[in-house]
Image 1: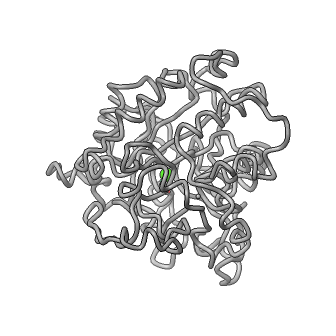
Image 2 (image 1 turned 30 degrees about the vertical axis):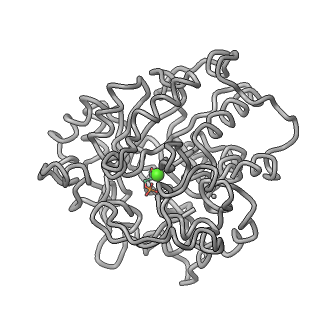
Length: 389
Ligand code: G3P
Ligand code: CA
């Protein structure tokens, strides 16, 4: 797995906290940061749990990553300001000294300016990450203090040239900074701000002595965000990581599902022969429902594409998952042509928008409970259109 995004045809990468104030979208007000031990936002504003989220739920994928370098406080803030119901803040990877930071992958060559730091030139390495040879700079080889000297940059400038305007503006945020930002925004808005962190490569990091689940649970407990009704949904591509979380925290849990022929990396390491195709069968879904509240499948598992990349007929996954009481939050809707089904593209420009509204409408019609999108503003409008019939 590792680069699940490769199943969607592109590689992935990401960036800050000075950001917090640097983001023009943050607005004034200077709300006091939520500190552990004080009256917490979750206590003051309450939460009725994940079932109370608006449907279909618009989830800002890595923030509003269609408009800002992904996994920065600037991207998270913009997603929230655009009306996303939940912010994927963030994809969590550890530092050498055990802190959790927000990057889509541990390799940070494409999402930060690390290659321009001569003092880190000797940290460049080739590693095998979930079976894939990967060359670059890895968060587990840096202390948090070292990572904080880097700045985020746009991951896919060919598709998002305008986003490079913001290169260098934001730091890599920590998970604790995200939780303080969440508390602050909840106070400012007077309602719960939901986040949706993902644990990346849990088996890989556990073998390095950097187990993620205990660290995530500890931070969540510190901020009072580890309860059943806490506005924090946790996700992972590794089912055993979700099972481990199920014993540590009360939060709603979601198993991510990559392409049908793939096997979760924890299954590979443990010799479990099941593939995603097995997990999306009723017996697989029943098993997932014994420890999780939802699934996050690729959009292709909801509506497969033909050889030309056009959408075909929806599978029975929505019906089958709902029959087991599981919610579905598929990934990832993006406005640019290369990421859309072929029959929704307009022209061939890699940075041109296709008929994203048409694609959203088609996916919403399947009955999904929500969707991850890099373009939360488009998603919010598409949802309004859908609900208006
Ligand atoms: O978390 C949903 C989606 O983010 C999973 O894919 O690769 O973008 O983390 P990825
Ligand atoms: Ca993710």
